[in-house]
Image 1: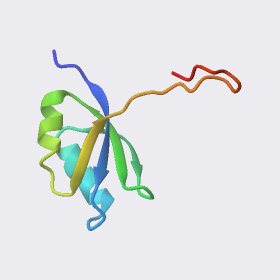
Image 2: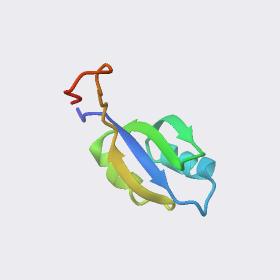
Image 3: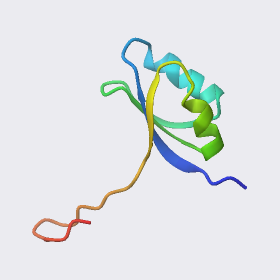
Length: 79
């Protein structure tokens, strides 16, 4: 069974983000958020689906969505 991961997709500015989101969904991305202001879409997909998503017109980049923990204030170690 393929492993589903979270992804951040950066889209080009010359197309509607909602149209690109629709195409990504049609290709198998489970969309979580659409951030129109910064031109990014987040969603879940397996590695095979991500390879298809990279070919969608309007996709500039796809990167894994990683959680970061900067720790509480005043702590030297942030990672």
